[in-house]
Amino acid sequence: MSPVTSGPAADVLPPLSPPSPPQTKTRPPLRIAILLNSYRSRLLPAIRASYERTIGAVAPDAQLAFYEPANNYRDDDSRFPDPAYFDLVVLGGGNVDPRKSHPWILDVHAFLRRLVARHPGKKVLGICWGHQTIARVFGGKVVDAAYPEMGVATIDLTEAGRQFFFFPEAAAAGSLRLQQHHRREVAAAAPAFAQLARGNQCLLSESNTVLTFQGHPEKDAETARLRLHDAARWYGLRMIDDGGDSDGALDEKAWARLEAMITAEHDGPAVWRRILEWVWEPPVLGKGLEVDRLSRM
Image (cartoon, rainbow, N blue to C red; front, side, top):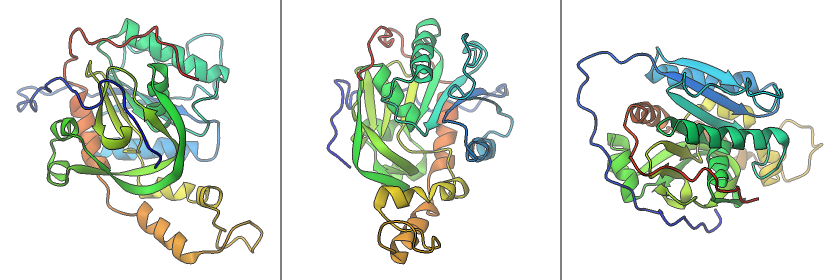
């Protein structure tokens, strides 16, 4: 990965609330809005199914609603969720450079600004494209990665991250293992965001309302394998079964390594449990985000 810097809030995080005590009453099912920020393709149904499987595994009663702002363009806001109805709004991955200024991308920016201005206590989760887009909207910087990442990778937690991810898998190792699939990264975190993982791999707003990951807690091996062909473009490898029609050197060992990385054990389920617990945590008063900050193009 290329060198990265962080914003002023780098590793400074207000004291987090201790783990919630056992609940004496049943919580209502979480209502989660998920924005799939990709152009229509054969992979979108599989991406949607991956969210349903991974969230359903830890919260079977969660109610998910999906939105596709890149594909359902209208002149009103009906293609975006109503934040007042949902407990969590997820800005998911995408198949377009988040630094572009396509009208639908700028509309996502505007939606995010309205959300945090009108619903300052609402929980927002950013994943991959969403992680990068949230960083840009609030003053961070996104750059091309020196080396694309694919498959399960280990991300090292900061001290603030160790406090936040207090489940045994993370506490023992001081790190998380998550599926990765990206060619760009956050080089500078936005002000008022703290690093929970080194290299801006995971960020949390000081308001405790916006949490973002470069990696993919929603992605399992089944879904990750569908994008294995990207390695041909990213790493110059030739598809083993392409009949010799593509560029690059045939490297069966490299494909085997990628397959092993994609199918490796990861902490996605534990991370989702922590995310959904975090949704119930209160915001930090007086730590609102600057909604009038311009995106850095």
